Length: 361
Image (cartoon, rainbow, N blue to C red; front, side, top):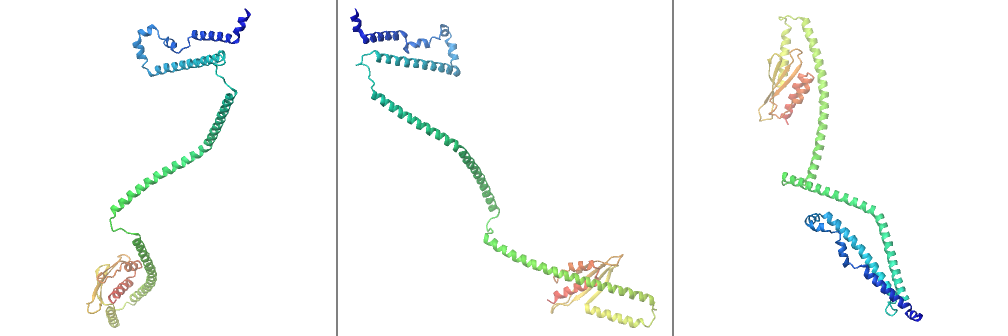
């Protein structure tokens, strides 16, 4: 009896254990085909009766997504269990099967697998180092990229702004060209015109300076004439006082020689100054007509000077001169200057001097 048990040995025991495991696996019902009933087990007869309403409810995408997620989770669990049982089955079969039929794993294969694993580990380590270096580079370069981005953005904004300005300038230039057609002022012409204006301004500045000097001289002459007129007024007032004090009789024989002398002097003065006519137009206006000799064969020219005095103070209030336009003489400044200083004699002398100076030019 002990011999048959010895003949069975270890292989017989392994065969028996394998057969027992195979029967257990067949009875465990692990096939995925048989799991269809479990997948549909949640459906009841009541669900079949209300299939129309359920079909309508399953049309909701949120409900369908939830069911699909549950089914995917369940299938993953089944797949894991299947792979686990399959691995166990292969492992058991490799143990209980005969040595000749079982796959033999040698030490060389283990070394090759270890080398492959080591190579994969080195590649994985290199990949991790590259990833870490890349992440470090990203951390370092991110601020620089941000700065470059800001500079590029500012440059693009400035370029857009400048392009808008260029468009506006071109539009303005187009409008200016339409407003100012040909011929336009070029840069050489503008330079020439600028040089001419500079020369003209220099000439005008010299003329202004000369006029200022002449004005100063005229003011000095007017002041001296005013002093002389004031002295003459004082002398005339003293003479009037002397005449009133003398109380000469009209039949006095001394008046005849004085009258003759005064008449001759007045005639001489009129002949010297070419005074042709003098009369009082009103109580305070005196009109004097002078003859201006012209170069032959031109006839003499006549000018009229109207002196208007103030009624209460007998000061020279205004003056007018006619006949100077034909000679091209402008006497407005002379009249204003002498009216301000109350110099009637100087006014007449200045107008006659200017008119005669133009006539003999």
